[in-house]
Length: 280
Length: 308
Image 1 (cartoon, rainbow over the protein chains, first blue to last red):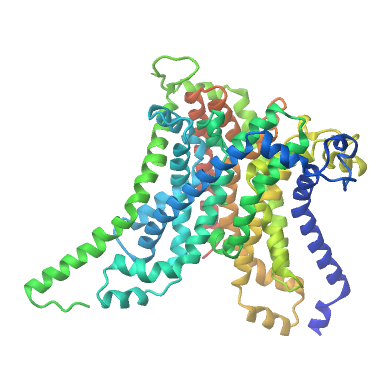
Image 2: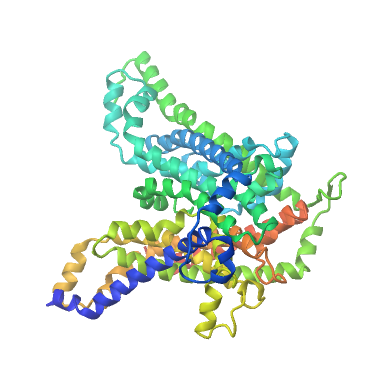
């Protein structure tokens, strides 16, 4: 009876309407980005708001890649994001392991401190960071960004890594240590291989976060040579505000690495976002 | 574990205890703590101290201590109060729709239908789009020259004619809010879905046998089970959204006429464009204080009304 009642046609129609709504809502803005990026320049003003372009071209992508600095911005961002992700993951793996396997004095305090760093407005430290970086002579350098992004992401990555370590039975390393390994050897030879998916997911999360950070990058990087993609793109937008096709082609390019990493980490999204629910 | 009856054995056991409980964990933690301390906690203290100084990079010269002058200036700064009001509209406007749509999506994903995995990947995608790109894309969507939204809004009678709402002081804030909703729905959907999946299915079966309607099982089983997760997620998300300046800074820069200026964008523009670090830090301390009060009030309410 109940099953029949639940299968009533109105509910089914409503459900598929909801599915369609969410799909459209998620995809439409991205579709529009792609659509304008392949619309030929001479058609943009006559068909800018039409749902389909009557003609398509890859010219905008060619121009963005060969005639502007975007390739360098892309490269800079790639270096910064990969370096931040790699360093953060290694450091956070250590900290997450400590939280997962040890009970020690001061543990609650350290956890509270890490949670605190996720709550206060990061903009609060933008001025001091600028001054410190300037004092060290590291303005306009990619390494300053790597350092800042690494520190910002460590707390979240630590909680994420902890949740992965918690999922691995403690007996495994106990057995290895019984056989004469030191704890560090057990971690390296037994536990880390089992955490590889977790390490990969953490890399993906941090890469995505570093790839899209814009405010600190704007503050610390002002020379064209070392601009990251977001900074370069915002500069481009304020300079050439009517080159719609090229701007959106650049946008599509910025989307590629994020999408690749997203496909890779989306299996771990639930774990990532709930273990470090303090961060989006 | 270690049965130490003789003195040397006891010492060895003691050494091992000291090593495992006092020293070893810190070896794993040190790199993380050093970086967090150097890059976040020390600058945090320095930032608070800036709020008592006059530091303007455009007016070189030694920074000087000015006591509470910055705070007095803040109290009589009209722009601060406008930003505060806008922060509330921005935060709760975004939060309400993110939460409602996110809950709907989580409930939908908790049912069965064909190609669900693909659907899930697609609807979570906005979360992965870099925020600067989200901001630019939505700014373009609201542009009547290349975006469809003004024309649609005019067609259904919300706008008298297709113009860019980002240029209209009364409506501009809804532009970044729309972008924020798009970006934030996946986060709520994911966390709520995780909570939904932890509800034991026996409860629903029992309710069904007892003849409960779908609506009754939703209000009597689903909601009470989700409540703790909802409370914590909403609280943390409020703080996160209030701090989130990227979308507004890129879409409107706080304009027109400060109609979209929220506290966090005000902090950023004061530091980034005016290079007035003293006042920017004062604004930041004020924001921190307000968020702290909010958290304390919410926790107190929770203790009072939610019996655990």
